[in-house]
Image (cartoon, rainbow, N blue to C red; front, side, top):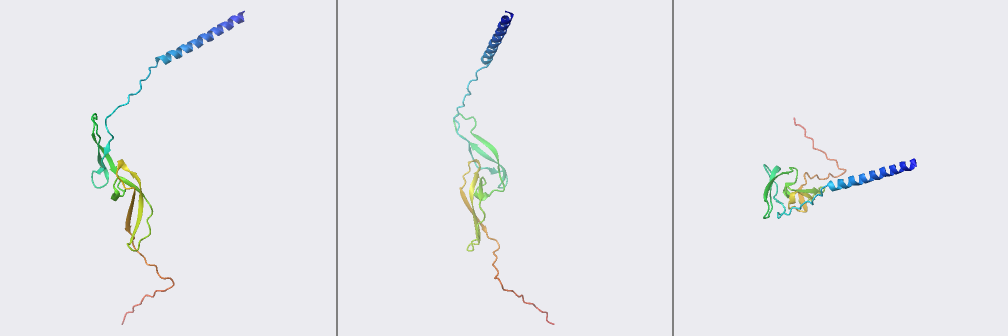
Length: 161
């Protein structure tokens, strides 16, 4: 009989603990405020359109670019942004266009120039860049091959007495 009473107490204690846990979980869930969904900003503003980077001095280095956008409800329609034009880029194709160049080709003996092509690698800030460019440079010193097997004798000058 004592054993039955002990089992009932144990069962009651377990049941009360279970009910306590359920109530605690319920109040925790109820205590959490439901987060309202974030309001999506509806904007009549258009996308920013950026001008090319204009160096502060020289043709490369630090500079600025102007940005504009349209829209009736826009608080800001113009802004200036700092930018940088790398000084080692080929400026003849646009300072904001970066190309991957192939190796120099063979020298064209008719023009004394060698050429290579470059494929557009990157265009900064939506710059208008050519997809493929070609550059040329002088071949440099052209050396004529010496005929094999002939010995060249240099004339020797003797002082007359």
